[in-house]
Image: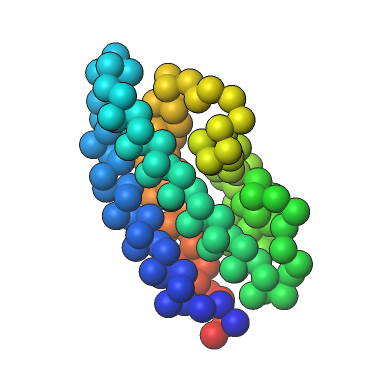
Length: 142
């Protein structure tokens, strides 16, 4: 059974981080790139939000009786199979898993301009993700 309290707590934390991130995302590219502090804040908030989204994904999937996804990207795709996200949206937002991995594991040097681009998507996609998960929770048994 889905632990609604757990999911709701993670969603509240995501929303709080998003509120902070929106101020950074509103900055034009040049201002953002001129501020190493903004870059660090954006990376850390994105890492936290995406990590919490992935936690939600895995919880919802496994509590639906499905085996855990093979990777973080797949966790978003699998939510579309459960009906929590539509497939097109799930495919688009699943790309954030790769960004999270690059930030956490420092696979390559992180391009601040690409992070600024990701911010623009995040401030639109993350609220949509939260709405859709909330709607799904309202429909899920329990």
